Amino acid sequence: MRLTVISPRVVSVGISFILVTTACSADTDDLQRSFAARLSKACAEKKIDDRLNAFANLAKSLSSSEIPEALNASGNLKELRERVVFSECILKHWGELDPAAAFARTIQLPESRSKVECLRAIVPAFARKDIRAAANAVMKMEPGRARNEAVQMTVETWAKDDVKAALKWVNGLPSGFPKDGALHDIYFIWVHLDPVGISSTVQNLPPGDTKNALIINVAGDWAVQDAAAAIKWAEALPEPDKELALANVVESWADTEPSSAADFALKLSPPELRQQAVHRALERWATQDPRQAWSWITNIADAGLQEDGIARILNVWVPVSPDMAARWIEQLPAGPVRESAIGNYVEDVRLWNPAAAVRLAEKTQDTAERERRVEPSFVLWLAWDPDSARQWLKRTGFFETVKNRWLSEKPEPVF
Image 1: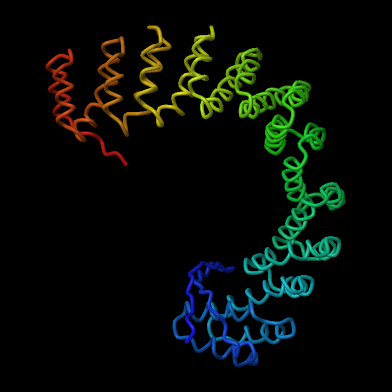
Image 2 (image 1 turned 180 degrees about the horizontal axis):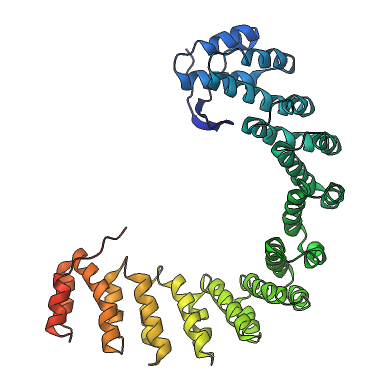
């Protein structure tokens, strides 16, 4: 007796049918049966999920010679979902066996989502097998969504192997669709393959979201390879491209040399760029060594940069170690920077550790601001741990009217 192993998985098809399929061992006799017999067996499944799964598995088992007969048979099935599942699975499987033939048959389908779904499986296989033939065949398609996507899928496959050849082909296409989309795809493949090589092309693009996104990618990827060279490139760009590039070079550089990146950022101008670059360096630095990042930011002279920089470090450090973060804040000298840090800490921590938020909020210098910060955190603490919250409140110097008001409040729901 042989056991069959059942392994559920999800298979999606063009018109959003969801099939829960099973990987079942095939009987030797089934493989030897005629297509008609195997189709009849699939049709005999009573549960719809089992029946659709059987059609999908049958499609995957077809030989090249059986595919024409199977496609004809798929059109004669009783239900729409059966016809869609079986025909799409046949075409996709055919794309694995003979992508050129499968492509030729698929492009004869009416413009539809189903057609596009099939092409998404077939075109990459066709392009991998014979890129020139695939490119020529795709451009003979009727204009429309299917052709646009087929061009982009061809280009994506081509660019990964030979980006310059793909770019040359796309540049020869007529203006508009699908050229614009194909160029976009090439650029974003090229930028990660060779950020240095694409840098001159990027700086000559017209202003817009695509250019900005590519500048960000060039700056980030190039800085990983050679931060000094990336900085030189960024500094030669016109405004505002220069500021965008420099901020992203600093951010990427900080992943490996945060101290050097932060020191460089501190020397940048104008002030808006300096602030942005310092903040990005600190955010990356804080994920590596928040203690060193804290030491650096608390020793610079610019109070404005300090205040915002501390907030960014706290965003990273407070969820991990709220007690340590609170001790750091308490060691700050009295003044606006310390007060701002307390406020940021309380907002970051109160919804998941209101007791910690209350204890630090109590150290706020201004009386009215201290009450404003303590109140929502205390009310939540009172709801979660009333005994501890009441004991703490008794020891404080708040007015009795304030204490009584807090004790009577109900916390807002926390989701």
